[in-house]
Image (cartoon, rainbow, N blue to C red; front, side, top):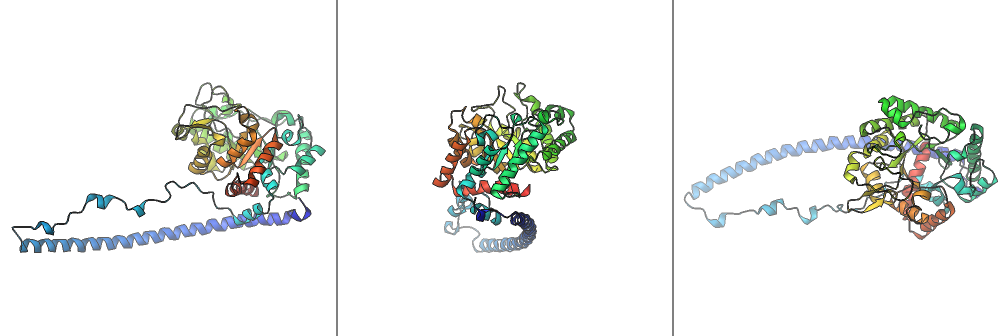
Length: 461
């Protein structure tokens, strides 16, 4: 990025304040408009109701008087020519104009805040493509195991302005090492892109949930209890406290996103990651996941719910390929969706979508991360999720299913995914996505919506 393209930190902070102010003003205006509309509607309904009653009374009186006159004029005969019979079909059938024009309408992308849109329109195609990716340090640098951020990291960041970096256990040797590694990476990124602000800053992520931790073991932090133990306690305050403490030490290492909590309802006795689920009762799991989100939020950590649409019915593992289920979509809505709905209502800002293939309404089974029905219609539509949707690691789930990773990324984005997670073969996948942006294979409206969700989340961090 050239000197002229760099974003002044104070300007970026001003943008953030303006965005939040516009959002508050817009919400207040919307509230007043809705109130006035309700008052207006009630007034109109009342007035029209009164008019209708008077009209009905007058019409009935006229009909009675007409009947009396007819009886007087012709007591013994009634001419068939004077009878008018209305067809029931003519009364009950809607006209052609009354048929909704929206019956088969494809869901529209939501309106984008003008200031966020201005930021997006100022970006180059390369910046847009990079922002869509969350990658491992190994994927962006090409090394086998990354434990420090040096010249290789700097060179990689200069070439690829990725949206987020996700760390794993192999990147952690001790507390000071990891703290230095993350801090150095962020400093390099900020120096290159003038992103020491909430809009363009690099996001960092780990998985930290008690039963599965990136940091606790290597850094000496006290691990939280497993989700299964917390769920068994029956106390949602235990989930809140556990994730509040997780969020506290994630802040020390400058981590923004926790890929947690696990929202799976362990519906099968052989569920493959039982310790990571809060239990078998969807209501209990819903209560625990929303409390976990609240705990992380109170530490200003973004929670990334995992893994939609819920994998609690999977017995043999779901590490790669496409795992299908015999459960119907309606069963998922009644059972697996509850924890996601509860956590979304609590304010979860990210959702990870996996490769579980659920039978769609047409009977076809498609891996969820490339399914328009599961991402756009179900998660964003029916569940009303307006945050960032990210795929599970395509380097595992796409390749094992026989998909080319670049093709899988393109299909995921067009299905509604806003970010792509890869742990290997990043450069080729990035180039495929960049080409799709330049060629129009990813439509501008879909791209802008994905970027708007990402930068809206960053502005709120």
